[in-house]
Image (cartoon, rainbow, N blue to C red; front, top):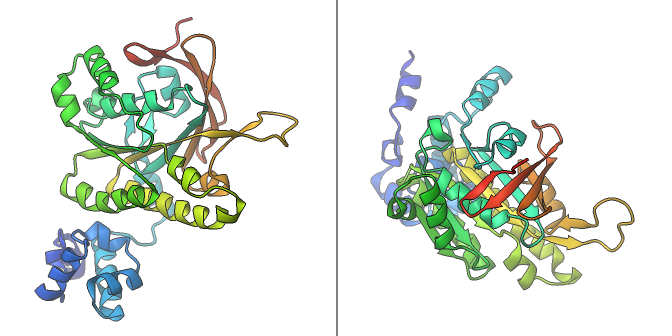
Length: 324
């Protein structure tokens, strides 16, 4: 093994970066860049301004951090091997897991969109519990972060779901970091701060934003605000995607639907957020109400999944397969 490769392997924290003075390291930490991951995904301009360092120094630091994390050109075979190591979280329904080729993926953003009562929030609650299960039971032995923008989080549902799985209720509650986002700026700031939280606590394996668009929709109404809204939303979604990719975390966002009066054929409801939300999430699933406690999940967009739909059920115990 060459000295250079050996050197890269020895870089575990920002303190190990070669040729960077302690003064600069302290500036980086004070500016919120406390890990290799936060440096690797930073832009040189932002880093330079935030830490008060020359642009050339910022570029050098980012390059060193990316090299240490092995962020580089890779062959298709290397990408395939990495994809084979993507982890999955069970939804609680075998049918829904089958639709998703095994469950909710890490390193990917999954969007669930649908009308009120279609099961979006119930899925978020269930996955926040299931991520804590051991891998052999469909979990990742991890913790969840739950960002609630509409006040729909219910600890009672978490309790019921944990009880149904025979888990220690207090333990399950303790492993979910909850925060209520009060507006778009607060929502974006929470995700900024998450970089530090997930770098300090590698057991975090799931981030939930329920729902991602409600504040944006309320604060930027009308066509005249559309460009600003989409720009801000786009940046926010890319922040979440970077967290998923860099820290090997599953990210779930929920979204509302709105009616399209100009639609004469097909489904007249579309997800809020326009083209921005069509392109950023890796997997998009539409949820619809059916009879009783049944819900329909349909793959709308996923590069590696075939189109299809399944029926699952919302029960007192959580997400389950629908009874025949």
